[in-house]
Length: 496
Image: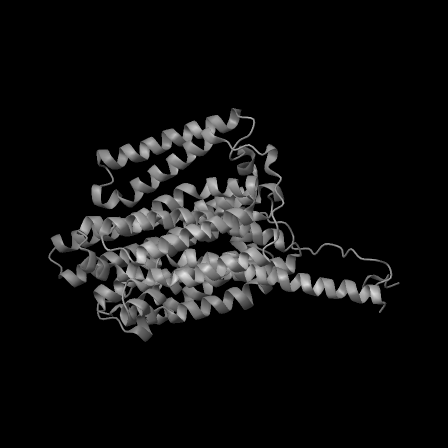
């Protein structure tokens, strides 16, 4: 090997290390965001007692986060394309970290809700561009599949890890620490991101922000989230809920009309003419509906039916987290490279459907090893295998200069699907519980009957996602690009 070749090889090794370090920083930042969508659930009773929330106001600890998170995803993704993904990522991390300090030290309910709203804004900025940055770092299909396995675990496994961490921190310390634990992580991510993330290469399509489009779509998304998360309390047929959802549809229609005629659209409508992008959004909505419901309802079943405390609930989710990590990091990328995107996607979603179906038969006097653990293991394996292919399919057809926007679209579909799915399945659960109580069933039996119906509906959503992905996706083959190097390098020599 010549001296010149040795130098080039050393440079490649340094670049490889830098790319993987950047991946770990991005995944840690996004994990911090994803955790916050579920870590709060186990601590809500303690928060209510300490800060004096009413039953209806307590929901805003979750809703305030979902509202701003869902509303600003598309805008954040486009800002990343226009002004730089690294810059938007850093701003999001700073906002989220400062808001976490405010939440952890909040002396009153109003300040906690305000802090959660700012957390949602910061979380939207981080989540909307992290996937785009990863896609830009890894162009080789094998490396990209492996990198997306890491990111897929963060996106899918973060919910299980959040329940686990929320239970441990609340059980051993206090609810304040579910927010304060973000502070050192956020500082570390911000410092590391400045050093290891590549400098922004902004192409921006003219460098102009579509302000009317941004206002229309952000308002539409926030109104829809507000209507969905409050639908169970206000009633799905109430004037309030129908008015909010109707206004959201009108604003969304106005947004589409504006995007079709403006010279610099926030979301080019041709993006949705790409088959894999469109199908991936459908799969994402159905998959998130099943996943969000599983995490939320499984925690409620363990607490309210089996009588687990916060720490026990957190530990019960440990098998899911471990298996999900293993399948995301060690199995999913190999399956994708060997079988393509569709087969592991379909298989993973079918395992998730089986998990929810098992939980739909969980009895009032359920045993952890018999009635809980099998479902936990199936969900961990299914989510770990399926999430990587979903992301690869969604981002594979998008041009690099629109990857931030596509990342925002992907995250929006998951977020909206999760919020809508959770609201609908909780509504089904409550309706079934009420019917059983009216028929004379014991309160605990009625409560469990409601959970079982909701789990069964979640299984149907996961099954539909598997069918849609397996039948409709047409992903590109996972073929490595031809190596580009100098003739003097032996690795590139003509084998003939």
